[in-house]
Image (cartoon, rainbow, N blue to C red; front, side):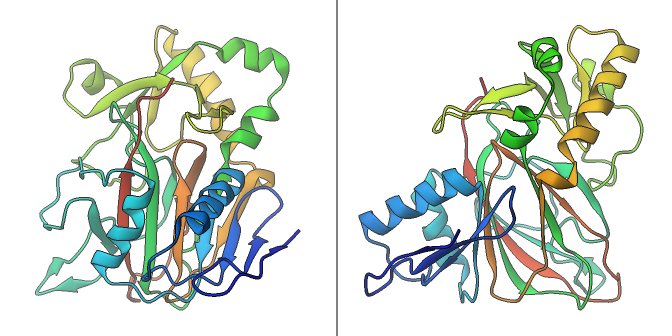
Length: 290
């Protein structure tokens, strides 16, 4: 149900759900302008309720996007290694190439479901993605509600995974958008960035439980036989990507999407390599999962 508000100025005028499982569109705000405390608290409450928020029709430069993101916590540093240099916490997600070099990162094609920087000791709390150029078709972003995914698990599965940790790994040297082979040996030798986190984490602000693993970066369950680990992870990956938990966003220029990495996953659909795609990402530091 759409929530309507009537205060004048730079205020939220409506919060419109995007899908039954996840997401809401926030109307009435110019994110390039200051927000008063009451409006920000309404915004934070909507974010905690809906997990992802869409702000359409924005016109934001880099500093304005950073200023808005910083309201939700410290801007996080990039932990990946890139040839392209950005301001702290900022990167371009783009397939555009100038003089033969990519101007951004994660340029082409599909990207599996994941949570940003889940392989770090302190994964991100929030990610904000702002659309500057988009292809005519494809390059959509899918979001999955991991509160709902956890709640829908059978009780026996909840009991089985309670207290378990899984190793999350990121391989800078390969295609970062899809999984290619096992990284278990490299992770065990400390050759790739990795960190073990609870499969079920508790959100530090809402207190709700969510699944915290993903097909792209979760490699194995700590202390479990490899074959059993693979079977359980396969079951959980399929479950958490079920369409009943998912909203698929078709981008428009000027959209800013903000999501909570502590209770959501996101993925990208394929798009033509011949069409330009340019979005600017800003990230907010999170806490160590528990």
